[in-house]
Length: 255
Image (tube, rainbow, N blue to C red; front, side, top):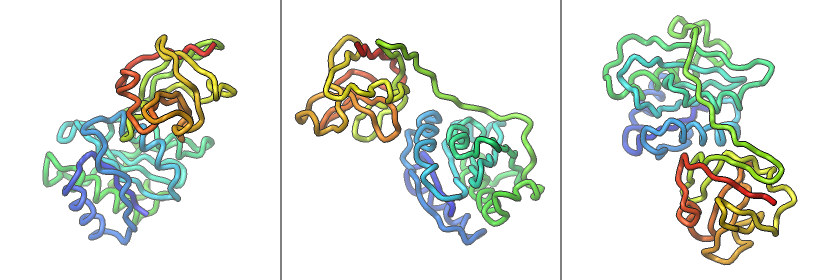
C-alpha cells in the first residue's frame, strides 16, 4: 500500500499517481489533498492522527512551502512504515507515533539527480522516491544508493499544555471541517466531569461526551477521537462560538 497526502487539491496528485504506477505495483490510497495550503503544522497533526490506522505502508506526503529551495528530500523509516516527503518536519509527528519505541526512527536523504521541475517535486522527486521505497522494501532502504543516512533533519513538535488540578492552559492546534477547535489539552483533564461545566477563558460551557448531549447551536466542551479537549457546537462551528482560531491560547478553569 502507498498512501498520498498533499495540499495540492486537484489535478496535481494525478500526475504523482501516474509516476508511482509507472514505477511500481503499489495499491494507492488517498489520505487527503485538501490540507490547508503550505500549513506544515496542521498537516503534521492530521497525519499523526490518521496514519497509525493504516497497515504497514509507504506514505507519500507533500506539503512543501520550500519547494525548489535547498531543503532536503527525505525518507523517514518508522517501524514497518516509511514516510517520503520534504525535510520540513511534516513527517516527524506521524513517524514518532508509527515507530516502535524500542527502534525509534531512521532518516535518509533522497538523491535522484536534478528534478525536471523546480516547482513540482511531488511529481519529480517524491513520487519516484516513494515508488522506489515501495519496490525496494521499507526494511532495505539503506541498500539503495539513492538513499543515504541523514546526519540531521528538521523536527516538528507541538506545544505542551500546562495542567494543574484546577486549570489547564493550552493552545488550539487545528480546526476541523466541522468547526471543532481541537486543543493540545489532554482529554483526561475532563475525567469525571461529564454533566458539569468548565469555564473557557472565563465563560462557562457544559462538559459532555457527545455533541448531541446539548441542544442544537449550543456550545460544549468534549474529548474528541484524538483524545484531546475540543471546543464544539452541536450542529454548528465551535471556533466561531468560542471566538478562537488556530494558534490561540486558552485557559480551562476546572474547579
